[in-house]
Length: 212
Image (cartoon, rainbow, N blue to C red; front, side, top):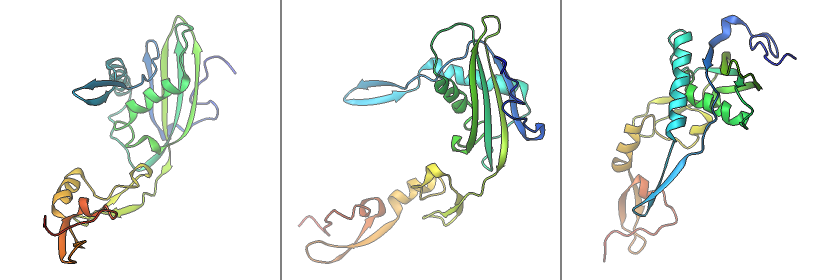
């Protein structure tokens, strides 16, 4: 196989009608950096390094400049083909370079990167033309299971990463935290008490109707 594969035909030919993104981002490919952790005032906070955020924004710009207007698609599964051409022989992990592309496309090309069901990626070296070539294509529609919001009753689509989600939106989740009530019996006198749902979920706790 030639050092620079044609992503439209490698490893098999992809139908042009299924292609959502075909872009070449010029410049040295970068890897996804690890989150940084800062400790202050007794707490820790993780954040994405600025270089990584800038690289993701740069990839989105290259994709937007070479493709039609995109919206995050939640209804299809996707295949991704990547070619990273380095300008030097510095060590870079292929999976970290691919992760940077995935994060740049999440919320821009697809809704959730769990929708990617096929990946082909390789890297090469050419000091004259460092770049990242990206091809994204649809693989078929997804039959999302539906769940019913525990607060408003609206049915909403779910993803594999949302297995514990119980509400259709953040607004419903916050409202339910303080408005939903569940009946329990006082552990001492047996009187019925109504507790916020988020407290009553702890079945191993003993609840009392009063301080006394």
